Image (spheres, rainbow, N blue to C red):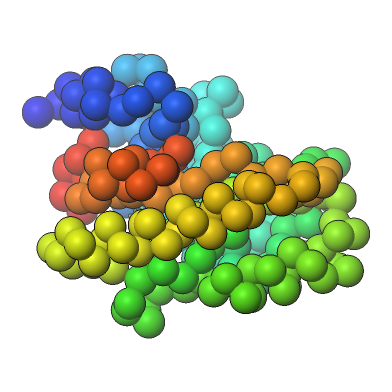
Length: 220
Ligand SMILES: *Cc1c(COP(=O)(O)O)cnc(C)c1O
């Protein structure tokens, strides 16, 4: 199957309110260009240097999403161009993104990453930490970031009931967040959950953004 065919097959199954992020980490520019030429404009990468290299080489109407864990000292390399940072899991990281966005005269959209998996290998906030972050005076003063929603990753397992439970938990946190009054830097409309193996389930649990890699580009 070609990248173009894979993309159109996946798109045919996505409801119109669900955004597709093509996760292109590890794949070379010609593969990304095949997706681009098939109409894909949103790409997700998990390493800042790799994303910056691809940004340099590719058309400028692409939206680049950082989906991986972000080290604060590398934020400056993506601040000029990144469209959405999915994996923000601390006030410290958010403060650095705010600072670098300001230097670039930008407002950078961010998703707060929630810890929903049973495994403790994955990053993320719990609900109490989320509320503490959003209630802090420091957050309220940030003018160059906008929290546009939440992101989460389910446990890597074949147990669908387990995955569904985790996605449902995240959906309920998202719903309560979305029910709060919005401010300039808090406008939660995006729930980023679901990858190649579990995106149908994620959509059934309210996902509005799926991050799909191997089902488009092949196994890494
Ligand atoms: C790699 C990755 C994906 C895509 O995974 P696939 O199983 O290849 O679809 C999605 N989200 C994150 C955070 C990733 O690191």
